[in-house]
Image (cartoon, rainbow, N blue to C red; front, side, top):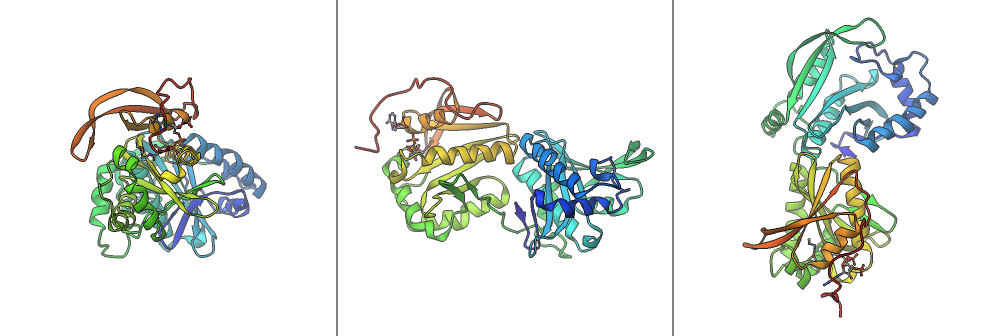
Length: 392
Ligand SMILES: CC(C)(COP(=O)(O)OP(=O)(O)OC[C@H]1O[C@@H](n2cnc3c(N)ncnc32)[C@H](O)[C@@H]1OP(=O)(O)O)[C@@H](O)C(=O)NCCC(=O)NCCS
């Protein structure tokens, strides 16, 4: 879910069917390609089926990501926006706003939020935009977001009628960064997504909740980061203080969510909301990221780490559309390696000195998991059977 304070992008739900069908009934001759919902007799039942099947399938495979654009205050459907033909490097963007929602900047807001998702979270290199020749509203919307006109493709559009010529526009990741940096101080109030904190998703399996870190987490986070195993195996600062925790929660974490460099979550007990640890995705590259985790001593061995790992992995593959996840465990950190093994990661080998811990190169085990791999242990445990270091 993404939100800029005025509109929200969220998944389409079956209870949007009626509004979705009304949106489809809205004259759609300007659409560059034919759509299943372009028929004049398209009903709410058709829409419900479409949302439950194709839209869900698109999210499941990660190839077509369709959002509802809704009024943040009342959840009214204003339109839909989508990334089509998503692969690890690019996608095509499509948008359709209801007649009542046009001309108020909502389309621009939706485009900005999707571009942020496409470039900062999916790490795409390019997004394309097609508009039927003559559809200046569409072309201007794309242009305002930084898209550049590449040219006209003859007889490309096939929306319910004779093929029509299409404009094709392109926005690369590099151009997007220039456009968003320049929009840091918007002259006309137009670049509304800039500077807005990212919305941290809540991921829950009923027992464990991954959520945004908050002020109440300062004390337990401090304790978790003073724990000898955490100090020994991670890169957190030594002699961790409450101030370090506050800087992390209110500075580092939101800044990284906003610039897309890391996505860190609190691992909380779903019933009490008590902080158990932290987990996150780091070192994003196109289609890949690395998992980092630190669970407090009191929650180790409870299954919390495995549940948190599973929630994060599903999110990374199904919502961020990543292809591979990596896991680094400093050599001898058997608890970490075994947890990764339980989650389906494959041990690839040892890299000498690759894990730099407080300035000291340390040998590290590297493990990997592909989006297509089973997400559970795949072979018998072949690691150490030593007593836990963190428990008597
Ligand atoms: C790594 C960590 C997240 C794992 O969480 P956890 O709750 O301990 O994980 P689990 O209990 O599900 O799995 C760990 C497994 O390793 C085993 N283990 C723990 N220490 C071990 C050791 N020294 N030798 C061999 N096995 C060990 C546990 O017994 C457990 O196996 P089991 O379920 O078969 O009993 C947690 O220990 C932690 O946060 N440690 C400190 C920070 C850290 O190392 N982070 C990871 C950096 S890569």
